Image 1 (cartoon, rainbow, N blue to C red):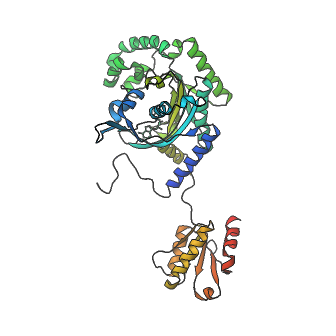
Image 2: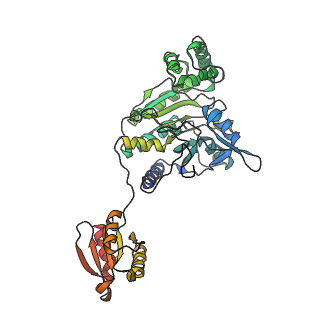
Image 3: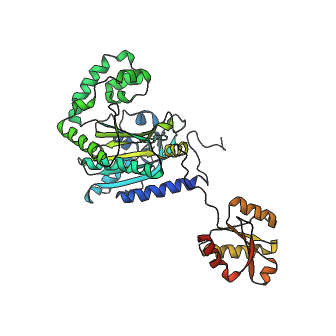
Length: 421
Ligand code: AMP
């Protein structure tokens, strides 16, 4: 037990971590293009925030939260998602006083007591954006495009945007009644969870993954027929903007977020190559959430994408992000006596902005060259011997094994030139 990480968690080792850094840098750059600023949120919050902000009847709150009591007797929860925290921070820091909408993004770990499998973990990372303070449909289209353009930049194609509108509390009431009537007639076909949902949160039955429930919901009444004029106009504009941006989408009337504070647009971006866990990204509008969290009525829209799943998709698609970088130079000491000189040269190179490594295991010169090769160094500088007396070093090109004598005073400029040509 002491030598294995808890189930559903994983380490990211050097070699892999550079890919994560690369992705995170791309995300930050991309968010700047779209005008979103980073927000760093606590990893835990008061449990009540998620009960209110995610919803008491959701799987996350009912079954998946890591909740604990701290030494002061408070109930705290490791964040299972970050929309509720972002809304809490928006209210706590009066971000509604700043130019609206507040356009925020976050990258970081989330925690859910989920059943681990490929693409599903108990600690996983999400990149998400939230635009709070605008009801404009172009913002819905903007966040969807932000996600799509990021995937495109990474080289991932053949994604599907599934799109739906779940209206507002006004038009939802009528839809809900019609849906409950339809589902009640086929109660015998529904799974146990959905029987419970039928009472508490019938819209959620629509996205149950059980085959039997799917057979029932396939012919369920569609929301599109129940949208009020305002919600219909909003949805038309979102679709129109996506079309103008050349983004294809599929309408999916079974896509829902079954809580009252989720409104209008909902979407999911899927990639079929992922097998069971096809969802790369999910989001939508939440015009009632800020109020639910204790603020004034304030519209908002956003998404969250899973980064582990994104890496799985990149892997499947054969897209390789830059991994561990090899050192520019390896400094080899001819003998043990030259070790301190090698260290001095190493320091000198690094201060000149040249990445450099040396031997730390008293290896022979032959073994040092082998090690330099394994590290992938472009050059090896050998210090010591007669060259030291002449104030020179041997510079070995690791690609072709050629070696030449260079004056110490010229080493930095020679290396800088060769490394950059
Ligand atoms: P959600 O917050 O449930 O809408 O999830 C948004 C995205 O986060 C999903 O589309 C997945 O890419 C990712 N995700 C959600 N749950 C997990 C999990 N347990 N493990 C890995 N990724 C997840």
